[in-house]
Length: 383
Length: 221
Image (cartoon, rainbow over all chains, first blue to last red; front, side):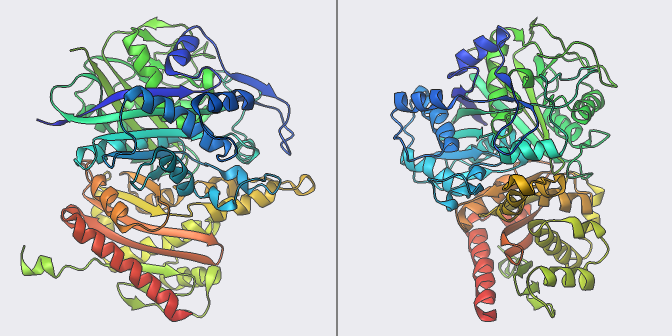
C-alpha cells in the first residue's frame, strides 16, 4: 500500500489573524490586511502592504513563551507559526523522525542594512535562521531551506512529501515566511511591479501587485493505510526556460506543472477549485489564464487571495494551501477580492463573491522569477 | 553489481576563485576571480551574450554547467528532446549573499539611491537555475536549496528525492557559493536515476568531489 502524506496540523499568522481558523473566518467575511504606506525608510514612493503589527508580534511571542531579544523579526514569524502548528499536531519536534523544511525568499536580508543593529551579519545566511528554528525545538536533523523565489511554499511541501515517502521521517514541519523590508519593497518598485492601490487580480483595470507579510506552517505525516483527512496527493515543478523575470507568453511551465499534477492525481475529478497565483500584474494573470486554458481547466472555478494578504512570497504557497483546505471543507470558493471585470484573454471562472464549492480537492498554482512554476494537489477524505 | 558499475566515476566540473577543472583536467587561464570567469567564457563557452549581464553566482553556475555539458557531448540534445526530463537542482550556503550586498549598496544612502531591477532580480538564488534552463531549453524541475554549510548527506538525500518526479530522467546537480565578486566555489555533476539508488555511495562521491575542490583551493594558495 502506498504511503499516504496527510496534513495533521496547520497555522497562519498574518495581519488577518493569528490562527488558521481566524484567518479563514476573516477572509470569508471580506477582511483584508492591506493598507497604504506613503514611505518606508529610504523608500519614498507610496505602496500598499499587508504588514504584521510589530507590537502584536511581540505579544504573540510573549504568549507563546518565545524569549525576547534572541530572535529576529523573521525568525519570530517562523517560530510563532510553527510553535502553534506543532502544539496542535501533538508530535514530538525533538525526534529524529521529524524533518524541518523552511520556505523563504529573503529571510533575514534586512540585517544587511547598516542601520539595522542587534544581530550578527551571519544570520543573513538562510541556513542559520533554519538552525535557530530547529534549535528552538531541539530537533537534531539538518533543516533544509527551499529558496525558489515565489514558488518556494509549494516546492517546500513537494519536498516534504518526497522526504516522507523515503521512510526516513515520519513527520515534516513545513514553515514559510518573509519579512517585507525596504530591500524587497524597493526592488519590486524598481521593477514597476507594485501598485499603490488595492490589487485587482484578473481584472481589466489591474495595475500591479501588493506585498504582504505572513507566516504559515503545515505539519505533514506519513503513514501506510487508507487515505484519510487532508492528503497531499502530488505536485510538480517546471521551468518556462524563457525569461528570468517575465512569465512565458505561452504559460509553458505552469501548463506543464498542471498537466503533471492532473496526470498524477486523477484529473479533474472532485476538483472544487484552483487557487491561482493571481498577483494582479498584467503579465502574471494573463499567463495563468493561458496555462489554465491549455491544460483544459478554464471552466474550473479559480480563486486568488492576494487581495486579502498581498503577495506573501515564501509563505504564499503554504498559507494559500491552508486557506484552500478550510474553504473546501466549508464548501466555499472564496471571493477574489479586488476583481470585478474580466481582464485576461482566456476568461477565467473567477468571482468577486464567495461561491459554493463542489468537490473534495483543490490545486494550488504558483509561478515566480527564474521562470519557475509549481502546482500541487490536496484532497479531503472523510472516513 | 557489475565491475563496470563499481568503477563508475561521476564526471564533474569545479570552479573556484582561481581554478577551473573539467572532469579532472585543469583549464589554463591568466587571470583570477571575476576576470577569470570572463576569460573562461571567451575561451570555452563564448556563444551566449546573456552571460555578461549575469551576477557572479549565475556566471559561475552557468560556466560550470556549460563546461560539463560540452564535455559530456550528446547530453544537451537528449534533454531538448524530452523537455521535462532534465531537472536542475542546486545547493549552497551563501545563496544570493553577493548579489544581496551589491543591491543593498544601491539603497543604503538617500543621496545615492538607485535601486535597479537588473541587480534586484539576482537577489533570488534560483535565478541561476533559470539561466541554465533558458540556455538549454530544460523545462523540467528547477530548485535551489540552502544548507548551513556543505553537507554531503543532506545533498545526496535531496538529490535522490528529486527523482520522485516520474518525468525526471536526469538531474544537473551542483553546489554553488559566492561571497564576493571574486570569491566563489562550485561543482556541477550530472546524475541519472541509477546514480542515486545507493545513497551512501552518492554521499561518498559528493564528499569526494568537495574534498577535491578544497584541495584545489589549498594547493593554489
